[in-house]
Image 1 (cartoon, rainbow, N blue to C red):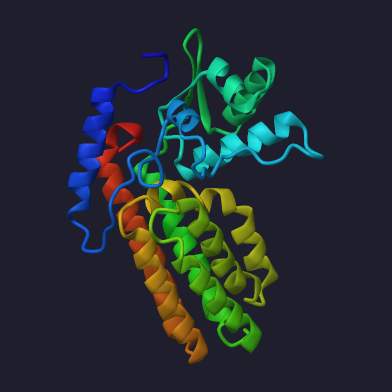
Image 2: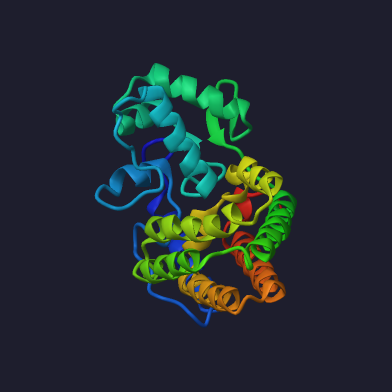
Amino acid sequence: MRPGGEPPLDRRRRMWQIKKYAKSYTIRHGFETLYGSVPMSPKANQRSRGRTSPGRIPSIKNKTKREVVYKSLKKQINSGYIMPGTRLIELELASQYAVSRTIIREVIKHLAAEGLVHLTPYKGATVAKTSITDLEEIYRIQQDLEGLAAYLATNRLTSEHIREMERIHEASMAHTQGDVSGWQKWNTRFHRILIENCGNSRLVKVVESQRDQFARYWFLLLSIPGCMASNTKEHEKIIAAVKARKPDQVRFLMERHFEGAAKRLLDIIKNVYPSSFIV
């Protein structure tokens, strides 16, 4: 086993734990063995060529290599695609991104300055762990802010805005069976319509300024069997309440939407990944 990899036995044990945990959900679909259902290490990322990744390297046109690598790694860490506690090995990352180790070293230092990576002398870099308390606080803030934004937006949305929400909802339904990154793109667009049309510029700025924090571990969350299908149904209820012009109902549904997401995420962390977080 190369440094930073995961022993086959541990891999099988982790799959068994997650499958066992999934039985508690009434809405579930089968696990894909390598991608789409299980967060993975950088080495597993490298093996999963051809599969969608939240950190897949975009075109380098008009961008520096350092910027591309930085944004890609940051997205993978924030989303939970690279799990907390995972070692970041310069040689493997340099090969994965086809850049020099110097660029990887600079990016890791930048991520460490932002608190996303922990540097240990003579041992290297690992993805920093997040506490359960921090996640609870983040989700509670997001729940209240987006609930307020949805409430304010309900009577401001035009018929075209509502039709756009319906189009986004229909498009997202095609991605509920394992395409985590594809579904998340439509999910972001859905929520952005409500935020951008709330009529409160300061609220919009607050939400946007915390976007990276609010998006923590979305890959881990959406990899839970049935989560995307359940969230899609919740979006449908929100649209119905918006069309009925019931702001209080929209706010209630949006807040419950985030409350349920937080509960699912914390449950899988506590039951499957307790060693990767500060419990």
